[in-house]
Image (cartoon, rainbow over all chains, first blue to last red; front, side, top):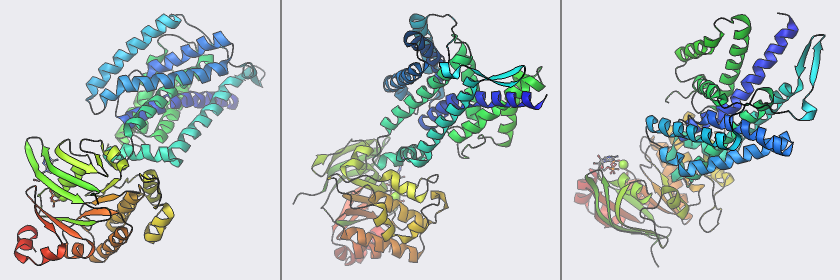
Length: 290
Length: 236
Ligand SMILES: Nc1ncnc2c1ncn2[C@@H]1O[C@H](COP(=O)(O)OP(=O)(O)OP(=O)(O)O)[C@@H](O)[C@H]1O
Ligand SMILES: [Mg+2]
């Protein structure tokens, strides 16, 4: 493999890892802070992609699709938390799995009714649709680079909110000792609602940014859900930084696995997960007592 | 003048076992109250009941003219009660300054008497340690931090459980001095501690609990004057 090909693969790995991070960071927040296993997380990723397709087709603008898609997902998240998810707090995992599995069926059905089950593609914004010529017969799509940049910005924003703002402090405090934050006057039921909505919005955002470089199809959330759970477990439940590390590791392992070990590439990420868990049972950046 | 806190016929249960058997007490604005009694007599349960942390709790709790019995802890906190719990409840993954900042809130009447600056004046030690994680603090520093964190909510009443438990005598003195300062600010406190002699110096009133009932409610000096009562309920 020459240097250029290697570079291209590296960019692919990073871009893949970044999108995975967007989706998985939402999952780890919901899992770590609300203590809820949300199997429907992947369904929101799929739904986000369909929303992007539909709104973009309607308005002709990918940007409107992105903003509106994220806003819709956020509002849906607020409503779902209020109606369903808050009943799951402190309940055992079986109940959570059952309810969120039910949500998958409902979301699938909603997708069927609203958008049908056709496979679609979404055009990237015009000024990002070109390619950069690397060598005579190798070029790299600008949109993939843009994804890297965009995800970096979103990641920086998430980290800023968590580490530097009062909201972030409250969320971290609540993950550690819920009762004590309430004793200090924090309305944690409201915090929960927004954390869930942000988690859902991140899943949808992942689906939206991926739409122009992959196809939009009904089952696209399934694989993403499993990968996101792998990332969450790898990085440590509730750790957004861990999700970033885990997602990049998965991106690298998957991309280079397919290049170097094509015959076993599909199991490599699970081998990676097992190895990491042997080394650190609570994930790379997981808290020990969890 | 009506009381800041008025408790009547308060009963608390953990499952089938009744812990508090009809407590009546009142605390005036700015009053310092010592709450004492032997191990397991219900002091912590009483404070937790006042804070809305005991699920099965009957009777009346009026605070600042409002019935708060059955209210959620966050609403009770917003009404103006703060709790410094047994075991302190520091957020170990947050820095000292973050522990303080996340709790900052104006009082019920909008006053912001307590700010980071004032806390750091009162506890220069916390200023030195402001960037350290909560889990890196010594016991005394932790207690300073929990008291400061409670102050950051600008409360009218602070409930302090086991104020100096496990602290070295010199550190404990620091805490007593601080409680004196808080008392001078017009904030009412209910303080639980084993060291009644120190408590007597900073409080206006002593309440003795025995098996979930109030067996003494009066001036600390009057309790001091009854060695047999002290012996029975404190073992000193
Ligand atoms: N969560 C609980 N479940 C059941 N019983 C409890 C619980 N917490 C306390 N108790 C019981 O309630 C009684 C009063 O306990 P409490 O902690 O209020 O006493 P205390 O006066 O604070 O004692 P100490 O001086 O040891 O702190 C004790 O008999 C205790 O065993
Ligand atoms: Mg106690």
